Length: 186
Image (cartoon, rainbow, N blue to C red; front, side, top):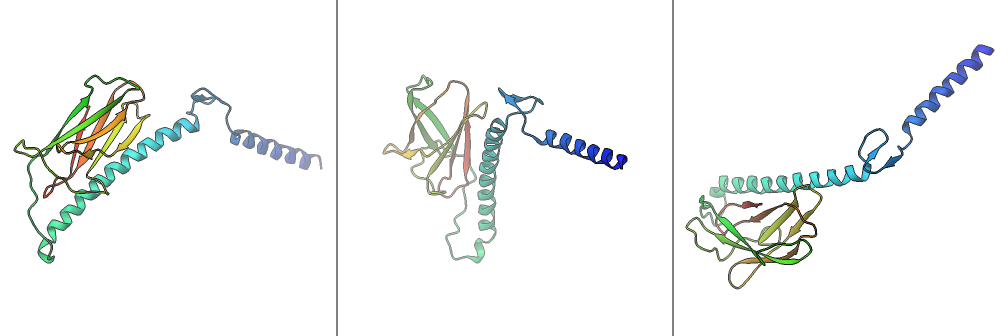
């Protein structure tokens, strides 16, 4: 009988050790007592990573869809005008030119065709003619803006960089009768 009681207490002891391992860690600062990131910091980083991957996935899906439309153009009675293969670009200007954290600026984009001429209109994709992604170098900030076309054919959006530091901007647009363009600005 003594052996049974001793075995039961050993089982309970092992069970309590397991429970102690499963308890939440006491965290202070960015690292927990076991050297792991706090769950909110981890989730923030994971969110931005998933957001960027989804954006790239959506961009690649749209290109895949365009290829399928071209492959099956002989079967449809839609306009099958060839897509231009030249390089469309956009130029970025800021007003004011000197950008300061916390101050509102205008980001202005001019889309140029392969001949260097200003493009007058682009396709509406995902309900907007242009999408602008702004990502901080440390991935702590991510913005999705929609510049609006102006009477001078530029696309403009007001924006305030809340913090200093380096940012990457990605202008996403699809010229008429051409493929989608995603241009990177640093």
